Length: 117
Image (cartoon, rainbow, N blue to C red; front, side):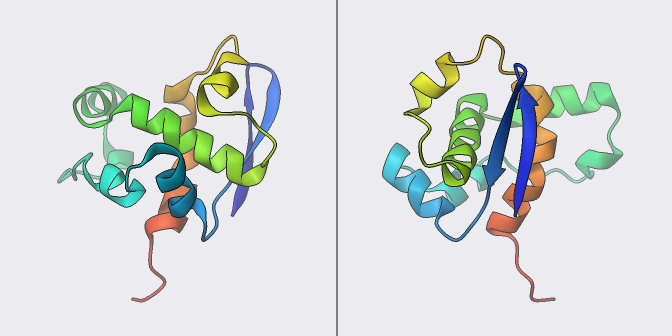
C-alpha cells in the first residue's frame, strides 16, 4: 500500500510492504511491532472520540519520537534515496506529525494486520 502526503509543500510518498519491520529494526535497533503495541489499547475506538479526547489520548499514549521513526521508515520504503532520519526531518521547515498520524494509520494497519477472520 502506498500513499502520498503533502508536508511543508512537498509531495512525500509513504509505502508499506513486507520489509518495513526489518528496515525499522535495522535503522533503530527496536522491534516496530513491540513499539506500536507499547502505545496501548483503548476501550473506545479512536474514530469515535471527540477532538479533545483524541488530543488527550495521543498525549498519554503516543511516543511521538517513535512515530517520527515510523514515518521515516514508510518514506524510506517508498523512496530509498531519502537520507538518514535526522537529515530527512531537517529538510522540512514544518513537519506536522499530528496531521500525518491519521493518514499513516492505514499503512500501520497493513503492516500489523491480518487478512484472516
